[in-house]
Image 1 (tube, one colour):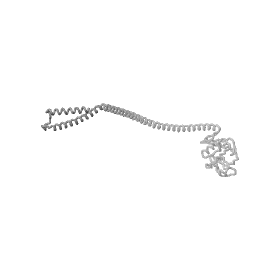
Image 2 (tube, one colour):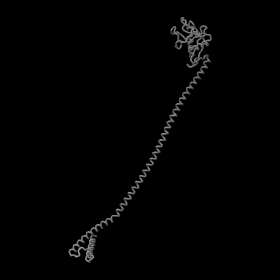
Image 3 (spheres, helix red, strand yellow):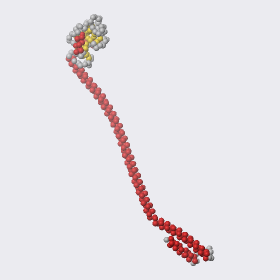
Image 4 (cartoon, helix red, strand yellow):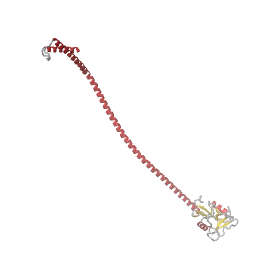
Length: 299
């Protein structure tokens, strides 16, 4: 191809020379041309034309190469553009999926938070209800205990009443919180006391004017043993339960301190109040027994 270009260049130079020789040249500086001048001009024009042809040839080569490689580059560009487009689409899809997942997780989190709040409220309500039920249970237990005690007391009262009825049928007399019994047989002081013990009682202990009056009425004119003695120490009077004598209803001039008079009777003389007297324990009188209603099993 270079040879052809050069050949064309020669053809162009010859044509230019022919044009100059035919009188159609545009050079008007020197009207007179010498052979040397023409030769130099021809040589200079030839070199310039050759350089121009070489540059044109290089441009033609580059243009040919550029036009030859353009379809391949265009294919690469298209493939790259398609790949980038696909990547963008995939990225958009991924972002969308992540956003949807995030939205779903947010909704689920809110639902779980709501459920947790509801469960917390329900738990608090259950705790309050548990406390209420516990208080109700404790109150019921207290009521049950109270009612049980009341029923127990009522049963005891019924039992006591039943025993009182039975005791009265056996000759016992109820006064205040005690039962009294007058033995029908006259015995010495120690035997009378033992008879009372056999009846789950003991000789009477008189602690008040009311009890003195009651005992006085029940003896029915008989002198009777009471539970007072100084057998342990002369002059120191004690009741059969070991308590000291405080309330006294001695007959005037009693106790007289006579020998062996260590036991006491009620009903000496005509006075219905101050009628105690000390007597020898070997004498025989009826005995007055006493026992508490709430002590032991009533006979």
